[in-house]
Figure 1 (spheres, rainbow, N blue to C red):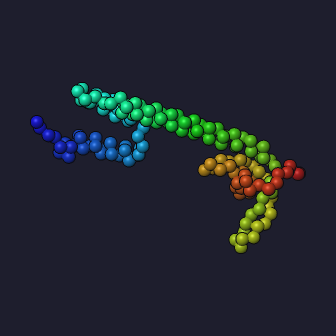
Figure 2 (figure 1 turned 180 degrees about the vertical axis):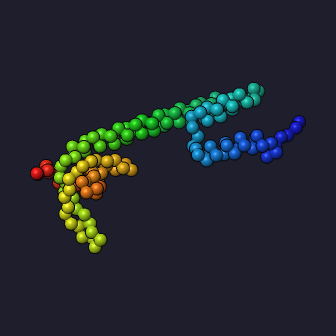
Length: 150
C-alpha cells in the first residue's frame, strides 16, 4: 500500500491550509459539520459491532439541541434588531424638541446644557440624539424635553 504524505503533494497541502483557515474563522461546530461527522461515523462503522442505540440517541439529542440553539440565536438576533429599530423610531419624536442634559467639564463639574435635537442615531448598539451643534448625547442622559420656542 502506498502512503501519500500531504506535505509532499501541493494539492493536498493547499486544501489543508484552506481547511485550517476556515477552522480558524469558525471555532464552533456548525450543524452541517455535525451531520457530516455523524454520517461518516455511521457509514464507516463495523457491521459486526454497530454503534450502540444509546450512543446514537445521545448524538441525535446533541444534534437536536444544536439545531434548537441555532434557531434561538437567530430569533434573538432578529428580536434585537427589531428592538433597536423600535427604539430608534420611538425616539424620533424628539427631533425638533429642546432637551436638557448635564455636561461634565475638564475639572469634573457638571453644568446644565440645552440643545435642539436634529436627529436620532443608533451607534454601536446605543441610541443617541444629535444636537444642532453636532454634539451627540445618549438617550439616558436626557433630563428634560420641551417644545422649541421661536
